[in-house]
Length: 200
Image (cartoon, rainbow, N blue to C red; front, side, top):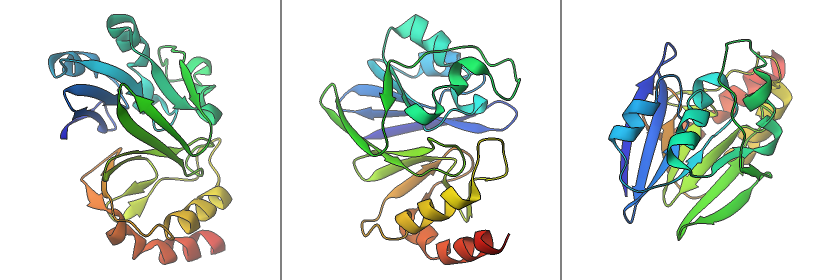
């Protein structure tokens, strides 16, 4: 497995290209991601969104048009692709596959699992490929995603952290912003975040 990463746009949102067995999966193509993606792929097979925020989905439509490959997004965030709820001028796109909660896919022979962790957005998910998590805006190095945006929920974030803390396997986390970390490292501070959310 090979992982390429490039921060995109004003929010430095990480766009990833994960290459497995010569096949490229594009994760969260944000603002201005198209040219970088096109220069770094050879055999693209899918575009995957962790959630629907504009800085993670901005280049979806352009890449769909150029590459003719399917777009996946959690179904509860699909409305953000066309309604531009944050009035950022986000180019419209439409998903080919709506992911329903925890769901596993075989994409051209590559096993891809979505794990649903609502809170940051209703459909917010991580994408699991092998022993890595593309964690979007759920988990960062030493932090968690914000829960004070429209359509965010602190109550859902608590439930998601309680779900994540029970996972026994370890994964390398590649987040939507910042540097990589591991699930085991982040699990150590999850109780503090849960307590903080419960009293704020």
